[in-house]
Image (tube, rainbow, N blue to C red; front, top):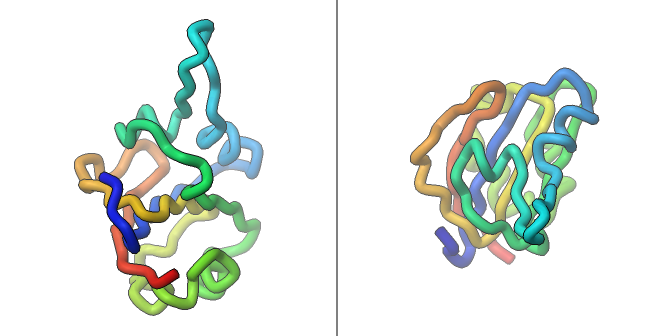
Length: 117
């Protein structure tokens, strides 16, 4: 799933910002192994947090919100406006998700896109 210059993006609709961050928060078991609801639902495996960027918006999500992210200007034009429905965004850089699970509960995988560093 690691792939240079690919970004995989999920968008979800959450009841609150707290619910969003709870969904992506890494939790550790007694053996020191970590996981999150996001990782469990989409079967992504281990995620290096240096390559993850997530954000929550109070208003309607727009392409402009992505312009404020790392390398946003290099991929924002590839995003389909129709897919930008929700208030929580999870992005994994240098990661090409297989799309094995397209949607789970309130979160949708919208695609893997090329980006330029």
